[in-house]
Length: 498
Image (cartoon, rainbow, N blue to C red; front, side, top):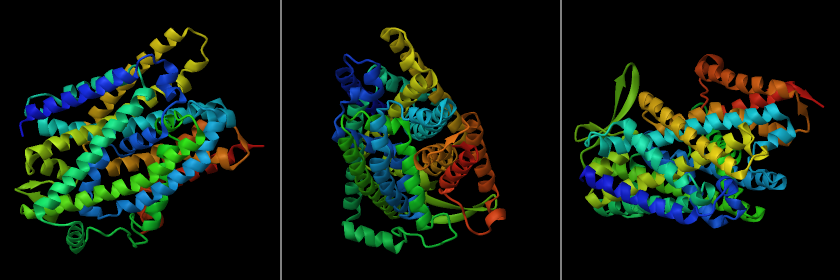
């Protein structure tokens, strides 16, 4: 498929997004940008949040991980569903009762200004790292598959894509994103279904026959029963629940969209429906991963294991090229399938890219304006507030560019593993702060809260690094997030006062 044609398709797709943004962004103000005037339709929000929750990382990494982790990711997704139910019936009633625009103002009311600022800064750092990691993965695929052959540097590619996102979020914010996310989620899921259908038809397999072929190769194992392993099912389900509570329930980006819904009951419906849909969609992505490996085998590929720097590393070599992991889906879709599938893949991929990046940029702008700079409380004209918000939005975009370049240097082979790992360190203190506020009635020494929230991740880093020396064969995986939250909770307990 010609790279130039694929590039033109991306430009056309963006033109559609810009048209939607122009239609929905008319007459907007800061209230529209931050929470959509609390008039969003809950069904649109629920559907659009699928794209935000999944992102390009899920689109690429989850199918690629089937070769090493089988269907174990479903364990985490079951935990996600539990987490969504807790958010719906514990956190959302709290947020609506307090009429919050930024959810971190709860920490100010409950503990004090230092706790509030600490929570906001933890979110800003966490979301900046996570969102740019997702952005990098998709941009890098576009770079390798299309723009390298046209001589366009990675820096320019990233800069142009961020400029696109700024153009359609600059005015409307959440009010626009609710609609653009719905469009992009539709394209992503449609692309997923079409790719699965084509590969099944090409291999001459039905759903049952495909699952049987995957089972023969060991791909369909859902539950890991190795108590000491990182993938043990109870640990994964527990981690999944807390990942959702932190990365959705106490994350300004995700809650900003939920709080844009007028009524609490509708917002709760949005969250519960999202949980069940996510379970089905992740199952489809895992099924696609199995189909991709079956297709690769039909082209002469085979999974092998080699020793590299003393460490066993898996490979999946097709036509002399190792496409194991994150490279699997892009390589097969763009190099081994018909041109129309390549087009569908590119559209679906950028549909997965934009919802995670645009929402994050909007949420970071909102948090910086409200939580850090106190824009809502400043007695200045609304036009001046709007100009200030737009400048902050541009600064956030520049930060995305810097972080994307850093990830280009790191270039991890499985970005979803890296993102979840980083979340364990960055979101843990937020989990501890909100848990302490909700589950206890104690006040804290507010000045010491930032110290507690720094010490907890530092201790977790050493626990993770030296876990074999501390606890032997038992391996700590994604539950590091829970440990981090517990350490923060203990620290807050130690500085409590009646």
